[in-house]
Image 1: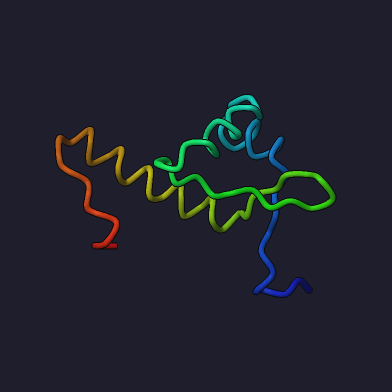
Image 2: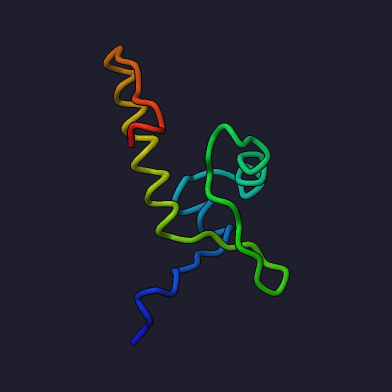
Length: 81
């Protein structure tokens, strides 16, 4: 059984194509923009992976902010979370 403290790592290619339907180079552009807050890659043997838990948190944060923008509300500050 896997250790619950060990993060689940997903290869960048899978994250890009299956999770976000974007080209893998898009993730590298997101990495260069710190304002997005996209989870940083984890490097193992020269390959790029992302932690599934951090991606889930990022998805929830962005969906909440997008919903508040659509409703015409101001999203809460990061300090309030």
